[in-house]
Image 1 (cartoon, helix red, strand yellow):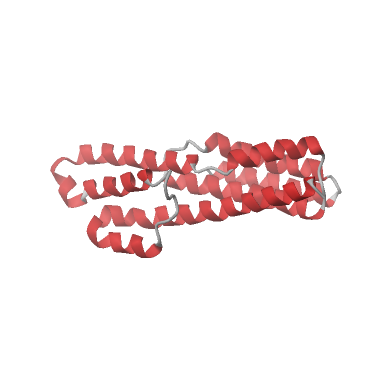
Image 2: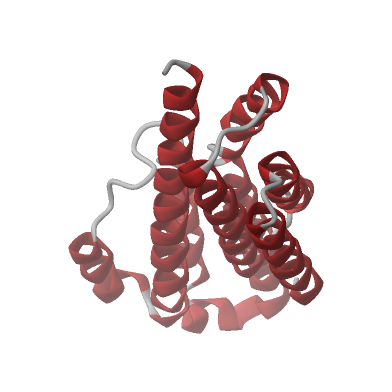
Length: 192
């Protein structure tokens, strides 16, 4: 994941340099390359990976946003950008990460034997199952208060996962907002 962040930073800087040189098409292309790297890594199986990919996706969106705020790009590139932004505005990577965390939890619980009662593994799995079930219906509806209310009923293993779930959800929400604003800016430039 460190290499992904490094690549995203380099491509973001490249995008800024190209925009400063008056090459908006190349600047947007560099941002789209970050998006493509993120999509390749979306299926990583843990929340920490999902959080890093979301961060890099935000870096890409910010780089493209900065370019489109000051200049326009060719229509063919704009069409490709629209398609890429539609792909990036997704929760699929988050779902894959939560499913991966759940699979890892099942493996760990089976290895614990009689200690699983002390670890409260079923509550941990219930928390992840709840997060998976809300994927289609209300992905970000759970509030901080309802997360806090769950801590008393879940045990230490599940309650230690809540901050990671919350931070990943918030990060994805911010990134998706930035991607949606980018889609609006791009659409407004298409129809002057």
